Image 1 (cartoon, helix red, strand yellow):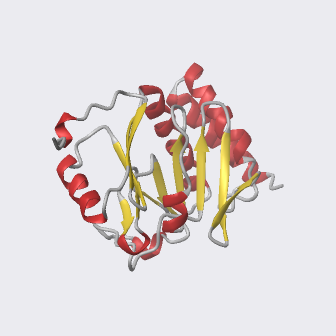
Image 2 (tube, rainbow, N blue to C red):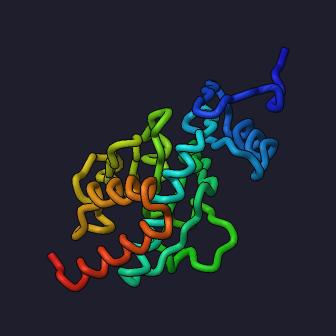
Length: 216
């Protein structure tokens, strides 16, 4: 008996892995699930992953994304945030929906586009994954050549830089080399839980301006 997608139940905070899924089947599943869903989809060389995030996961995603936006605004860098957009490429046999992602160095190349085609367009410069309930695997991000991947596990921010097709963990961000990202992002994320989102963003903006006036 074949299962229908609407028969599958993935509880919040859990993930479902399905093996031996072809590329056409993956694309069909994406279409059937549609855009209005709480789950996220990952695909790499026949392995399909369906994840259902917890509220804690969503809060961290939003605050970290907002901190990055404030940082880029204060650094006067153009950017484009595409959230959990589906990125996939048949030639790489991989697809992913990050928790959040940003075009920064390549922003001008995708500016104004309604759709991104990784066969001709660059991948995001930065992807964010919240790994509170599960561990993000590198396979699909490496295949799609996302230059920088941040993973937050609830207490630590891990920065991974793509070097020769493989991720290496780094203490510094390639995009923000002069700032202690691994320290300040967790610090202000925790601060938001005590002081609220708006107060935290104001404090973070003031901190960045201080760094700009007193460069390291």
